[in-house]
Image 1 (cartoon, rainbow, N blue to C red):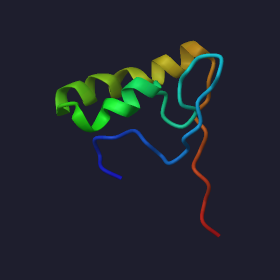
Image 2 (tube, helix red, strand yellow; image 1 turned 60 degrees about the horizontal axis):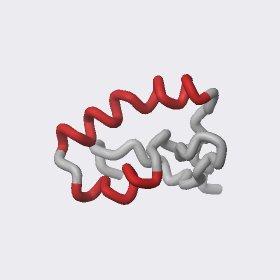
Image 3 (cartoon, rainbow, N blue to C red; image 1 turned 60 degrees about the vertical axis):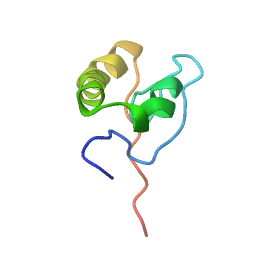
Length: 66
C-alpha cells in the first residue's frame, strides 16, 4: 500500500458511524481517494485517529497471512 493511504485492507463500514473499521474513512472519502491531491489526503489522514476515537471505534487489525 502507498504511504498516502491509511487503508489496511480491512474494508468494513460501521453502520452506526459510517466509518471504515480499518481506516476510519467514510465511503465518499474512499471513493474519491484516487482523485484527491496529496494535501487533501494528508489532511484527512491526520484526522482519522481522533475521528475513530470520538466515534468509540478501535481500528481492526488486518488479518495475518498463515
